[in-house]
Length: 118
Image (cartoon, rainbow, N blue to C red; front, side):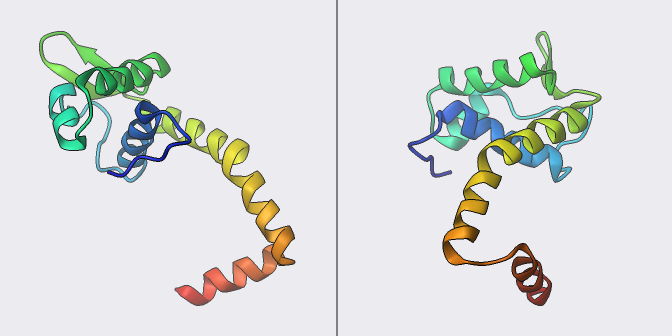
């Protein structure tokens, strides 16, 4: 995974986790990789990985079974969907609309382009 400078690494890892949940690679009550496994796989400090797990646990997306590991929460999909939707509206959409305005493009043009890609 290549990390971007503008966003904290633990939040970028959290977005990766959210993507796995939203794409149903990880489902409710399923065990997810351990902190250590994730740190090794992503080549990050275990403390950074742990910060991701703590963040997602605080949001109620994952939970810890002491001595067993971390699991996707029963309503983890719904919480994740709300979180990512909020991030999209607050962070991505403003930049998207700014770019549309600079390029003098309409939303209808974008929809048409997207429909033609299928």
